[in-house]
Image (tube, rainbow, N blue to C red; front, side):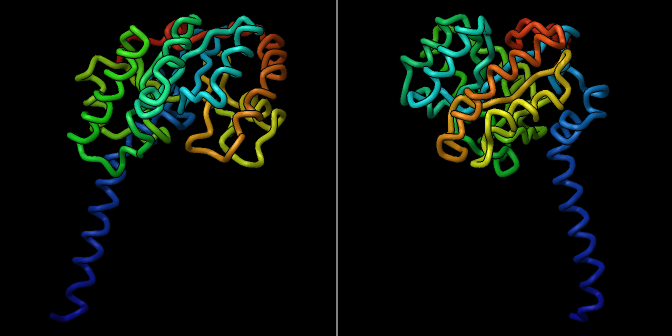
Length: 247
């Protein structure tokens, strides 16, 4: 076949694949942008002014979560912990401790895999398995779901709705997964983001990040405490953030 005839076909297929990928990731692209805070505020994690929702992903981890819980207790802060099902299976007692300490538990999926590589059925099964694991370990039925990497697909949105979960991403993050992260860098990154009425993403485990990077997260707490106080912000979990009821 003439290669010149194949070229338009290849371009068309390429555009079709790109278009499908864009549609697949549209929820995340919208929510994680500055425009998304206006177009999809509940998805982005926008709540009431004067409040900041503090969240942690990837736990529970026996190597780091207990230290995070202790530091939060000293500060008088409660947060939302988006847990991985595979981590809960390894430490169900620790998952229960998080809930018993007054923190909110959320679903981060069963395994830390991007939804971009999962079909609708696999996505549904992954989220359901994690939800069941967390509920069994903590005695609490989770309300919130956040996809790994923040890559929310249309299939993920539909699965969450079917499982009676509300999806929330974030408006500020500490980039605390990096090997070069420090307490100062984490705090600076968070405080430069949208935090007055926003949702902050941190991590209580390094299971998918640079080894020991959770220590930078811990070191950021005093700086974040001052930064939040200077702005008159009350710290709390997503459930107390006043996010609109629409999903």
